[in-house]
Amino acid sequence: MTRREQVCLAALVFAIAVLTIILGGKKIDYHIDEVFSFGLANHVGNITPNIDYGKSYSGLGLYKDYVEVGENGRFNYTNVWENQKNDVHPPLYYVLIHTVCSLFPDSYSIWYGISVNLFWMVLIIVLLYKLTKQMTGSFGKAIGVVLIYGTSISLFDTLLFIRMYTQFTFFVVAISYLISLYWDRKTELKFYISYSLIAVFGMLTHYYFLIFIFFISALFAVRLVIDKRFIELRNCLLMVMGASVIYLLVWPHIVMHIFQGYRGKEAIKSAISTQGTIKGFIEMLNEISKETLFGLMWGFILLFVIMLAKKIKKNRIRLTFNATIFLSTLFYVFVVGKIAPYKAFRYVMPVAFVFILFAYFSVADVFSGFCKKNRPEIIATMLFLALNIVCLSLYKWHVPSSYNTSEKIEAFNAVRGKDCEVYIAEDWQALYYFQELQYANSYVFFQIPRDKLAEYGNKDEGGIIIK
Image (cartoon, rainbow, N blue to C red; front, side, top):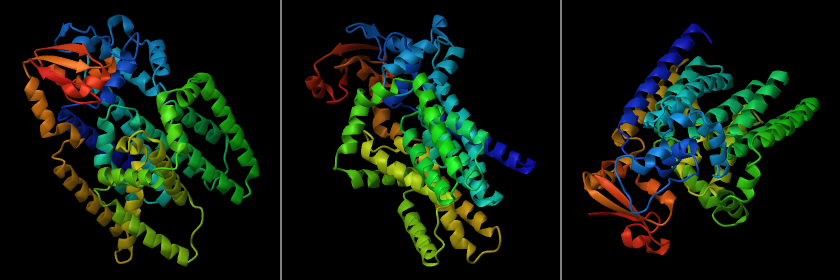
């Protein structure tokens, strides 16, 4: 990269980090899975808190041993491995969370988790710039895309969600960039090593990475067949087999998670069902539209279809890399929409940048018909940047907005300085109240049958009674 490119990217990364810190400082609550992230990374013994029912706690209380690393438990990666074996996700993200927490023993902070995501953000922005420039050959478009994605609700939502989805996004960008480099170039040893590393580490991040890498690799294989690059195709197949063996040696628990774990069973059951196939796809696209393209994605899809129709009419359609990444993303959203346990944005966070990429390309192409050179990129960038600012304003600069509702604030104020009784059916449900109970004077847990939970508040979570 040139000096100008390095300066621009450094400035953008710094600005994103500052905005993330500002938005993170406004975050008042956590998703239960975020608390799980710290517990799975740090807790010794099992994957849920150890609760003494009937005992009075205050402050972090029972959560202290769950979310913190003790002085004698630092860099205990064997425990992280064991926890993830007993959970439903691969271990790489939790290894990093545990590493950061080990640097600050006997303490807890939300920033330990966000710092890991910020690390991946730097790599994402740099690689996304390189990917876009590889696709377009344009400095202006590449900067425009990273500026728009870097200031979007979707990226801030990803960065402030203390789960593995920022890390997952990096590996999606990385495999996309790698294949773009060799789309029209002969594969070499560097490609095979890089692909294997991305595949293994991506699958050690999240099992859904297999879906994306499968489709983009399959379309790359089609490209090799069309170009009669059969020796390269053979080498790629051997590479995939080798990477699979390495992965299974490192993390054999994938087999148990998929075929015996409750999430794996849910996914298989959903996959073989004929119900909800199109509905799930549409719901996931709506989630992307809401979080990524300001609720306007369907308009951009229509614009993209119109432009695609024009290319078909002119016989200009072929299997390009641009078509490959777009199709791979649609296939990913389709499959995830079918098998994901919830139709939630987090499952499509890793591919959100692709929709921004093509929305930007479509708008810039429209303006190119009546604007001078470089003007289309500038106009498109300013348009999307303005939409990002409006969207953040509508969110009242709280990301995600669902964490900062009046109901949440009211619930926190209700328990502030009070003595509370918490009624749950299983130990893990205590994590629902992690942040809320920090405001209480004291709290006591009581275990009740699951069918009684609704009597105390919520049939899935239980509830709090203020004494």
